[in-house]
Structure formats: structure tokens, C-alpha cells
Image 1 (cartoon, rainbow, N blue to C red):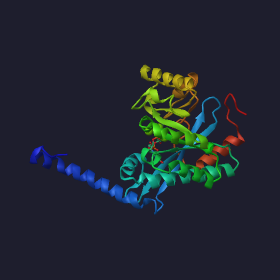
Image 2: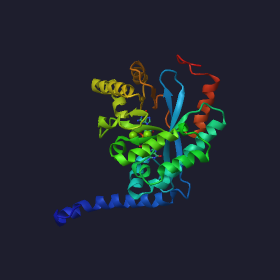
Image 3: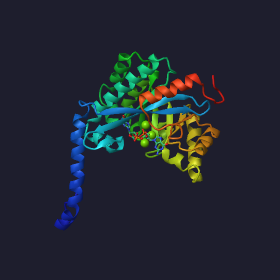
Image 4: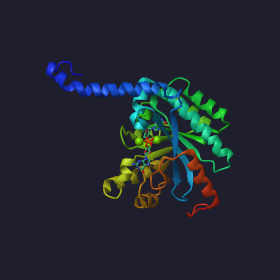
Length: 288
Ligand code: C2E
Ligand code: MG
Ligand code: MG
Ligand code: MG
């Protein structure tokens, strides 16, 4: 990095680099033992149908209770887990834990919600991943429709022709596939009709400026139309205000996720939400 910049440059950058490298090593070291020490947990954020107001799914979001530093958000360690390959065992654990929880909700006789799981590229394209998904579903007696896998635009874009079969296999299992943070980068519309995907999740950055930037409103409307024209469903991420929700509803968006309805919460809290919903069906227009 500092090669060729001369000695002074090297010395100038050294303290910062060292601090970063030390921090990185500490995280990596902690991550290596975290699975065995059961330091990971999942929170779940409800996904809500815009027409009925009912909870139709939850997204599983990992947390790491790092004994050195307290609760860490995935933004602090997922990238490193991907670089080191640790994402593979961590991702397997997430899939298992999400399926175990999905089983428990079904056993409680609650509405059969879909549990969405984030999947990183190195996990997705390792040999045997689809088999792992199928085995995990079977282990908990779940149909494929019990889960949804969220992948990035980038992963989809980098899918080679010979890997398309993998996506088809997932589809045959009945597992739904959604594109996370849609519109945030690497956008190429060419892949959309070529691949067996079910849902677009509109990136939070467009939603948060809905009221202030008319450009974001236009993009959001365009993504909603695009999804529907392609026969996909569409969910808006990061909805924080009623104005944002009303806008999305008026534009025909199917569902949303965001602090307006709920932050990511514990499985027990989701159970309570679902139980409350069963007692008092949603006030929405299509309440059963
Ligand atoms: P994501 O998949 O796009 O998840 C949504 C993120 O937005 C979550 O952050 C969630 O807490 C946050 N969020 C939801 N609603 C709102 C809102 O109304 N306002 C704001 N400001 N934020 C909102 P979180 O839990 O910190 O996760 C960050 C990212 O880490 C996720 O983004 C996902 O890319 C990654 N991630 C989380 N869990 C996993 C996992 O199990 N495996 C992998 N590979 N990645 C994960
Ligand atoms: Mg996600
Ligand atoms: Mg997202
Ligand atoms: Mg994101």
C-alpha cells in the first residue's frame, strides 16, 4: 500500500494502518470462536402486507455478542467473515436457526409467515449449498416456501450461465429468492427477466428521501412498475414514516419493512405480535 511512496509516507500512514489492522485481527480472532461459544443470535424484522396490514414474513438479522466489545452489528463483521471464509459456517448456523424458529412458529399454530435469510456470495456459490438448504428444510419438516433467500444484485449479476441451474434447483425446492437493496448498485436490468427470482426489495436509500427528493419518488415508482411487469412482488425497505407508507401504498407496492412498524426484535416479540394479530385481525381493508 505505501510502497513507492517513500519512507515518510510510510511513517505518516503507519499508526492508522496499525490500528485498523489490530482491530481487524481482533474481530477475526473473536469471530473464529464465536460459533462454538454460541455468541451469535438472530433478531427478526416483520415484513408487512401494504394492503391488509398483516405480517407476511420476517427477515432474520444476525447479531454478535462479542465478549470484548458488546453487541456488534453485522456491518462490523459480515464483510470480514466473507473475506476469511467464516461466512460459510456462520451462514449455515443462520439457516439452521432461522428454520428452527420457523418450525416453532408453525408449531404454535400461528400464521405461516416466511422467514427471509440473507445469503452472501461465497456461501451461495460453494458446492453443496442447495443440498444444505434442502437438508435443513427437511430436518425441520418445512416446505421450501417457509423460507426466502435474500441475495445482492451483485451476486445475481455475477451468476454465470452454468450456475443458473442452481437457481432453478432452489425454485424446485419452492424456496423464494429476493434481490436485496435493489437499485443500490451494479444495476443491470438485463438479468432480471433471465433469472428465477420472486421479489425485489427496494433499497432503503430511495425510501428515506421519498418526501424530499422527487427523483427518489420516481425511481421508487419505476421499480414498483418494473417488478410488476416482470411478475415479481416488491417490498420497500427502511420505511420510517406514515407518509412513506402512504406513498408506497398509493403506488401499489406490495409490502414493506421498517422502523415504522417494528425494528428487528427477538423471536419472542414476533410471537407476541403474531398472537396479537390473531386475536385482533388487522384493521386493514382486507382483514379476514
Ligand atoms: P439488509 O439485509 O438490507 O437488512 C436491513 C437492514 O436495515 C438491517 O440492518 C435493519 O436493522 C435495517 N433497517 C430496517 N428497517 C430500518 C429503518 O426503518 N430505518 C433504518 N435506518 N434501518 C432499518 P442490520 O440488522 O444492521 O443488518 C445490516 C446488513 O447486514 C443487512 O442489510 C445484511 O446485508 C447484513 N446481514 C444481516 N444479517 C445477515 C446474515 O445472517 N447473513 C449475511 N450474509 N448478512 C447479514
Ligand atoms: Mg436483507
Ligand atoms: Mg436490504
Ligand atoms: Mg442493506
